Amino acid sequence: MHPKSVLFVCLGNICRSPSAEAVMTKLTKNQGLNIHFDSAGTANYHTNSPPDERAVAVGKSLDYDLSALRARQVRPDDFYEFDMIFAMDANNLANLQKIMPADATAQVAMFDELAVADPYYGDISDFQSMFAHIEKASQHWLTRWQQGATHD
Ligand code: 4NP
Image (cartoon, rainbow, N blue to C red; front, side):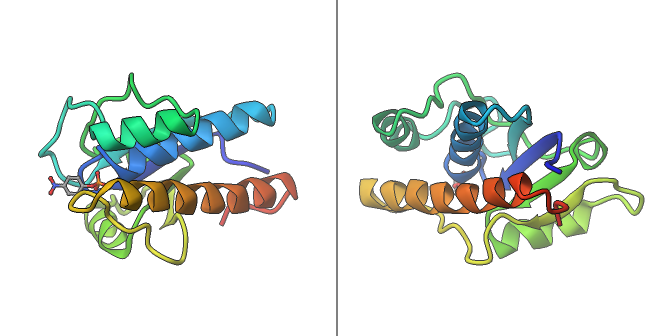
């Protein structure tokens, strides 16, 4: 079984998590899977900002559309409204676990065992590597969900 809803979480919600949202939205649509995706940041520095222009540009070159996404901070309701919350790195995971309500129903996990590197202070090649990493991890989860495994 696949989750019905998945939230991707990074620090700023302008690089990694909106990119993961766009990749997973497209890949699942292509496969006829009906899953709701969203993304958020543990920080609030970029609330209401569009994704980083480098993420938008590299995403567009790979046929992923990030243009309509706007940053928001993680909120307590997310821990009940989403089936799964994926952290992009170990700091994001630790920060999520700090604010997670005791009776949260969402399952919180790393998106990939290997942290998706923060490209914010890098260059275009770091954004290209980020998309490649996200695509690989996305394929892993899609295969897992389609094999009927539980989503843990
Ligand atoms: P993200 O990248 O967490 O992948 O969105 C970052 C975006 C902004 C900052 C850090 C990381 N920042 O320090 O403003």
